Image 1 (cartoon, one colour):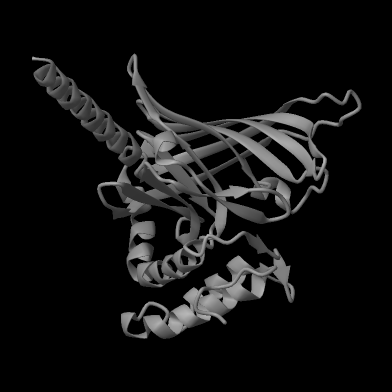
Image 2 (cartoon, rainbow, N blue to C red):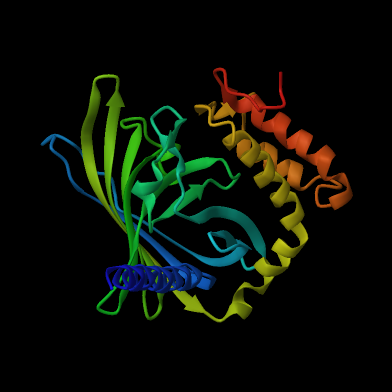
Length: 311
């Protein structure tokens, strides 16, 4: 009888886990589609009474979110920004990986350190890996999706480099501690943030100012984003090659540090230019293209990190 009860209990746990994972996947895929996006940020509190608060930041865009990889334990969502009705900008990317144990955690000075998590610690969780426009690392964190009282959300706190709205304008802090909450709503989804702008050095962290972020993704008809869908169909071969090259570097589990600009060029500029070159989306030339991608990334690598194939 005890053995039967144990088997029934184990079966129940498996069924509950399967149902939870199914809801998680549904919530992640709910973020796909065509959206009118509103970006809103406001600094809220500083422990320094003499701190001069910066102006609130507001912006908006039309954005297409498309699933480009889907397996039983991984979903990759690519964001495409539509500017002036016809210009497409490859935007950020978010990978969702189930019970992932391999993370790259941001330190400071455009340096990410590899971290391996024990399997028991990530049971039932999804890691959200966020990448820059050129598929270089940005931030990662693991947490469980929550489905309760009609709410569906995922929440995590992790460190990140400066956001683009500050990166080219400010030098008074060097790390953003991001509390990200992504919640599915009746109109689409919302990306809520409670951030801390930190000054980090070898002695520790000092809080400069806190910030509230409220980014809403309001779903509109997919026809408004058809131009982005068409662009991706023409350019997806090249960007798959870029992802595969990056994965080769990530799989080395080395500390990764980057120079933002080399010879007056950012890495994203090099990779975007290469994507526009002749043959970049020709599958028969993928090996040649990957070598050029690898060369571009290597230019910006600092320290001892290198691709496994580079001696």
